[in-house]
Amino acid sequence: MARFQIFTDSSSDLNKEMRQKYHIEYFRMGISINGKDYHADLDFEEYTPEELYGWVKEGNQIKTSLIGMEEFLNKMKPHLDKGEDILYLGCTSVLSGSFNAFRLFSLELQEQYPERKIIGIDSHRAGMPLGMMAMKASELQDEGKSLEE
Image (tube, rainbow, N blue to C red; front, top):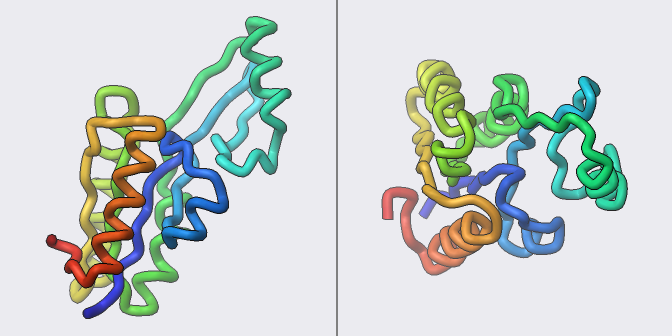
């Protein structure tokens, strides 16, 4: 059975160890602090957790943004080039436009890779419940379940 790549996003709360254990990749949403743009990075490579919570505590203007086209394309194309299908378990569309952006960008990729399956699921979740869904999808894949299953 062909393997497929599971993606979630930065709202999943999955740390690096969990993502590695379950072979899950993620798309980074955006975050803006007083007009300076960052990625919402689960590994805190651009800023520390202490800085983030300090910004919140200090009452800075914090805005979030959806996942951009470049982020989707740069992370999905290598897998599609290797012949892997894609499953994206996205943050609830009630809180973010990222799932809808994925649908639009995946249509473009589907034209370039008509033999590949690119499936997105609006999880209706955020935070660790979303991360747990991605981990369960990985476990099911390891049990031999297909992308559709």
